[in-house]
Length: 451
Image (tube, rainbow, N blue to C red; front, side, top):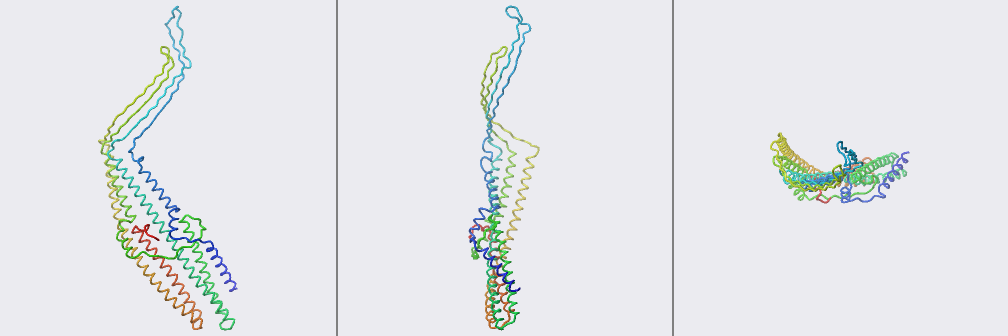
């Protein structure tokens, strides 16, 4: 039964390896970034927000263009008119009869064109245009933050796939060694050099290693689906990823840290919000000044009248052209402008406080990220050395095990120690890279480096 269980594990592991590697394509870091920028839903939404802000800065939304409106109308009237002459007589002395106008049609047509243009509105539209431009800059910064967060999310999953892929290789090596132990123990048992217990122990280790392989394979499949969601790709798409990493040179990283205030997206966004608040104050102050405007009008009218009792039918046409200038100055508007200016100034002070708070928080986050990066790099260095030590220990244990100088339990422990050392090194490597990405994001240089 134990041998049959081992065979089942081998078959399952083989099927999974075949399923996930047969048609897998390589996905480089650069290609992953390109796919995210083109297809990620969050980035697409942010780009649409920027497009709306860009439209709002067009001259058609600033109030600098005149407004032109046209109107036209037509009226049709059908009437019946009876005019009586009670005291009138004809030449022969008979009473004059009624004058009947049946089915009389009256038609009236009109058309007009009106033009209004604001010459001066207290500089309100000027500062509103400046505000819209700053709002566009803010939307770009918000889109940039969305892209940066998406890139960090992308590489968090991408590097998780790389870590699991490397762990799978480690587990495959461990599983191969355990299988060799089963073969060796079986031969030894057949030749009377060991007991059945040695074979069973080796089979148990193969079973445990096979379970570990199945688990990491499942984790790897889940991580790939997570990445496909970020990239907006088919969930069943299979690929391999880069497992080689290059860290930023320390001096270059220090230069980024020294200039973070000029590039950090959060700080730039707070400055943009403060500028918008300053423009809001100026827009509200425009209410204290007069509004001067031009207006013009062109009109045309035509009337087609039927004959009346004393008037013949007639057609009249009239056209008019007028122009004027208007001045409107609200000397007192019940204090509404005064209140709006006061509130805008308070909002501006609020943005200043928010800016100062963000500067303090970003400074703290950057210092924390620096220390975390340095700590994880140190751990990575230690884990690299630990792998070398455990590899040397395993090699010696393997030689001693072949000579029968140590037990299978001691050999298995050396095997597990090597496995843990390698997986810990993989974890430390990718944790250090993710810490570096966090430093790059806080310094505002995440999108200007090669991954």
